[in-house]
Image 1 (cartoon, one colour):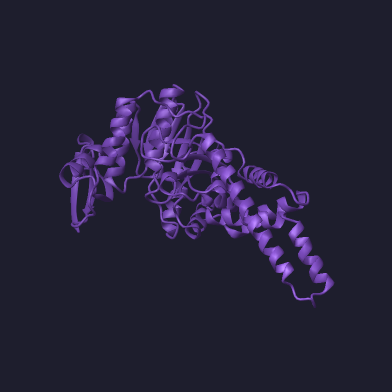
Image 2 (tube, rainbow, N blue to C red; image 1 turned 90 degrees about the vertical axis):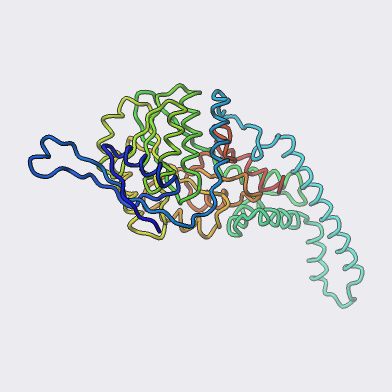
Length: 408
């Protein structure tokens, strides 16, 4: 481990010196302001010192991802994310999704046909001593195909990693409303509508010009908070023509600050770096004329009480009526970990949900699971690294089709 200190007239200057010498993978271990002592404090300004640590054997760096993101934004700055569902790996052609549901319908009908044939064979081979009640039960089961159809839908949802308790809840609410021997299409439609209803309508940023709302993006390390901010900043700045500012409290890694600096320069928006909740409070007056301030935060461990307390203090530096909070989660994270993460962040603040990395998995059950677990509104989904293209509001109908239709 390499440990080194750098100084500058400003925090940015000290960070730049550290980055130039030690690279973007270096970690900020500590920052402090050094004020002159004695009479010198009257004539000299303070300087800033940052302590940097660097792993001598870091993982291999892949610069091409960032370069490709920047190239995409520079070469086509007017390509804006639309609220409408775009074409993408996550949002394929609606006709393709309908075809998937039709295929599922056909598969269920075929499986049910095989099952009925087997049941007829069993009945013909049943021993003569079967009781009348057993024969009636067998006949009732054969005649009521709803149970079997729902069982196959259950398996489909389970394959997409929807939690068992939520599948049972959906099936349990749908089954009593079905007529006996409903068609597969009607049963699928009932389940689909129930899932859409439970997912609810997504709630996205609703910015009112002239009101400087602070929008915080919180969540674990590595889920894509900074890239998500860049995509939304592009949308707000270029499409909605809003007066946007960026603020980062993620000072643990130089790379995080520099990444946001790059986005800010491309979009021609200001970026402020803050290290404490006091500095954030001080920024409120300076940024009051902006329509919206997007705030990047450091990834916090849900198992570290001190880190979660630091985040709570940071959020509380902004009055409640002027802040919005979005919890950013990767859909590829294990459900058990997502349970712990959401519970920890629920103790810190109310929030809306953003799910990232939908392009890295074919199973979207965690979106439904976490929505059911927390009851908080869904907001955005991201499905790639391209800025600003790979983001859209979460669409309940698309998620429901994915859950019922399986892989693309």
